[in-house]
Length: 227
Image (tube, rainbow, N blue to C red; front, side, top):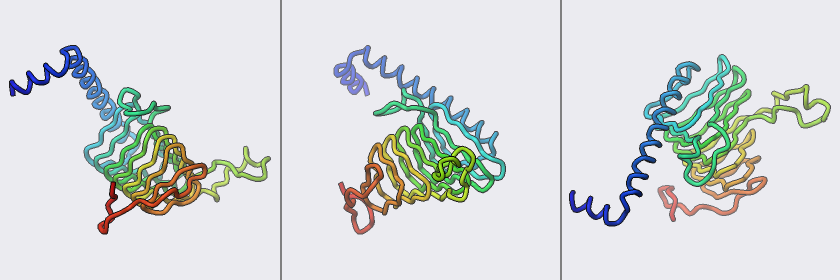
């Protein structure tokens, strides 16, 4: 043990080690505070959650009476720039249901980063082990009719809302937008900055505006990805 400590001291300066230790402690305190207030909000809004949630930064809920929000085990959310790995975050993580028919169902092991998820009247399902990078927006509605234009401010167009389903092990890159009525098949990757307006199959990389399949992911017989 003493030899290991001496090797570390020889490799790094004392100032670097102190700075790293202080910053690590700061990040732990952010996570503790974020998780504490997250759990209070979950109780306040009567939201179902699993065990072992970890939240760093702000997390906003709005749950319409009679709607459903559930979050599985080992959930993580990051919405603080000090904890973001490779990009800035525009806003807190925000989950909203806007009518009694809407629901947001999040599986186990899901990670969000400053994500906005809004279910106005339909269902948004996110499968197990989905990774969602910073500043992604997911919504089941246009919130206004498209045509005629004079109706956009007065006609909410509820009948055009549509379900969203994101399969297990999907990775959604930073600044993507997932629009109403789409499904994303399991294991697929959505490239950064994409707008997903049509469904994406399983085991592919997709990207662009609108997002299209770029290539297939090679898989083993058991279905796991090869590098």
